[in-house]
Length: 267
Image 1 (cartoon, helix red, strand yellow):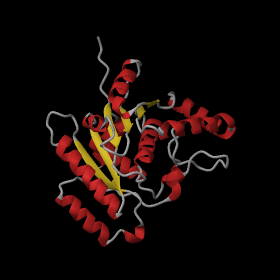
Image 2 (tube, rainbow, N blue to C red):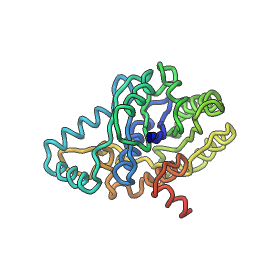
Image 3 (tube, rainbow, N blue to C red):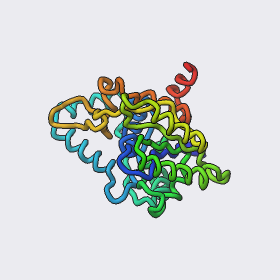
């Protein structure tokens, strides 16, 4: 009897809202699933809003009513030979149970399951779910309140989960989001020194502050950046450091696949 391979469990997680965890979950899932050939699923556990599931509904409605996007979807399916990645809505206290039930209900094998969890470890089930991740990535912005909240969250996760040898969580990595190019100076250096002193790993790639990350499917038929049905448009990706971020993340989580191996060999 052949055993199905175990997918990686990955979460973009933070205790502070509005810093990009849901956006990066969608961008990473769409990029890896539609462009890089990985089989991805998303567990939308951010109750009660279930933002990613709501985005999928908006995307689907836009495709169904617009021949332009309908043709895009058809050509993408014809090229890839696979459907859109599944999004499973659940309560945070049932995230792992729902993920296991989903994987048991399908013959398809998945490389990565992304989890979008509520922005507080005090919500029921969040800490347990984070304890069962393979990797956690935490976006931060250079705001004092956000930094204090994020450092508190990250240090707690590090102490309770990462340093617990009985758990599978391999690490939590911080990365800068919404960076104003004019401010990437001494302030960031001070913050990064503090983060280093706390022993928290920091990704090299930073994401600049740009409104491109908010561009969804629309009646105007403009290039799309954030979508559950399509990867970010190449024309919009340039200059956002999104691809560099995802390459760096792939080299950390090391999903099985040619793209990841190729990137490692080029370094």
